[in-house]
Length: 377
Ligand code: HEC
Ligand code: HEC
Ligand code: HEC
Ligand code: HEC
Ligand code: HEC
Image (tube, rainbow, N blue to C red; front, side, top):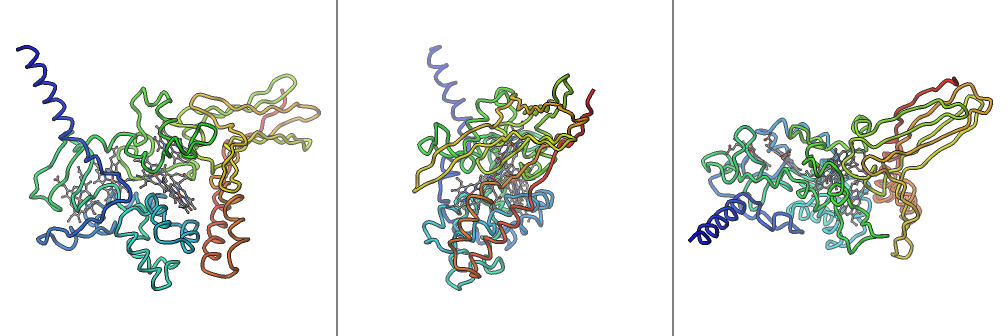
């Protein structure tokens, strides 16, 4: 009898957990078309356009608009898609503009020979639209209700038939479909994007601080990352120390939930310049190269959570040393991807123009942090 009660209880608990989980195929790529919206819905409720969601969810829309998720159908991406087949394009769009309706819109623009033109791209231009995370078969999904913590389906007499609320929205695994490559694509044991695995191994996973805790504080749809100087500064601590024979610059990763940086694309460089004109540097980056489809890792000097990078320079005859940290968020694209594409693409064509724009944007995104002058004691 006691065993039976135990079994019933276990079934009830499992049922409870399932009742608030997202459907297993929430992130099965490519995403299926939404189909027809209920005929009784207003056009505004039927719409998948972020600006229409924004009519009722202004706060999320205003924040999302400023995020890189909203700019994911970027010139650097589209410049490459123009020469691809529709199935190859869909592979990239799975992460950059994931809805089936966005792929259709992009292919429609391609048929009009206007795929390079944001005005012709329709819904595709929205990049990672609200609906990519929140809407399946026109049904809305979201996190537990903010005030009550309630999960499961809400009353369906609300706009867009209410919402299904699941704690899965607040978990790091929610972001993995696009931010974690599979282990069978590993280079030297680590996939090119290994962010979830890095987070799982970090102290933040043990503390229960998920991706959302740092990248969507108070549920704000900001997703600031290495392209934002304030965000990068928030994860690091810099110290300059005057020792008897040398000056020392230390950089510690204190609040980055994964390797700093997590991708192969950014480069961070600690730099020193003495008052008598000598310089030194220490590069923080995972360097990989691709040759004939084979990827090789050359080095990996990224900082895991808690780790410190050190740059030292002897005083010599100098009276002071200037230290700083340079960040180039798109170094790999700038030097490895775009330069090669620009050399290969027909000059002056739409693809070359988009890649040239991406290249200029990549260079303009460089910035400097923690600049300080240390006097000799
Ligand atoms: C006509 C106004 C309206 C439009 C348009 C609209 N929503 Fe909503 N949405 C609401 C209301 C009202 C609620 C609260 C529903 C409830 O409590 O059951 C809601 C709830 C939600 C929730 C759950 C939020 C919470 O408080 O728990 C999500 C997520 C959501 N909507 C996403 C979207 C997305 C994505 C779109 C566009 C594709 C959209 N909505 C379009 C009015 C709207
Ligand atoms: C598994 C998801 C995924 C797939 C598939 C994917 N990307 Fe990305 N891509 C990302 C993420 C995540 C970033 C952001 C990396 C960062 O933080 O800089 C990115 C960044 C980029 C960037 C630099 C930022 C920008 O938008 O200009 C380009 C260019 C790009 N991807 C092109 C492509 C192309 C071309 C394909 C298809 C061959 C592709 N991506 C497929 C996830 C993906
Ligand atoms: C990349 C995925 C993603 C995109 C794109 C996205 N959201 Fe969200 N949204 C989330 C996640 C994740 C949460 C829950 C965060 C948490 O639990 O900390 C959330 C929460 C919400 C909530 C509940 C907010 C609250 O305070 O309770 C609303 C409403 C919402 N999103 C609407 C939108 C709208 C509107 C857009 C487009 C303008 C949008 N979302 C785009 C992932 C996304
Ligand atoms: C549908 C795929 C997808 C999902 C889901 C997704 N992302 Fe992204 N994310 C991307 C792509 C693609 C980019 C790069 C956009 C660009 O620059 O072109 C990106 C960019 C970012 C950036 C900016 C990085 C930088 O270089 O500054 C952050 C931070 C981020 N995502 C965090 C998250 C978090 C946290 C979640 C989960 C709540 C999430 N993302 C869910 C695809 C996705
Ligand atoms: C403890 C806070 C924290 C947590 C947790 C966290 N991040 Fe970050 N993340 C940061 C900071 C700070 C940066 C800026 C510095 C950097 O790029 O590493 C960043 C940068 C990024 C970037 C920019 C690209 C790059 O190469 O660094 C992406 C993408 C990203 N995070 C995704 C995620 C995802 C996905 C998760 C969850 C698996 C996550 N982050 C968890 C703090 C956090």
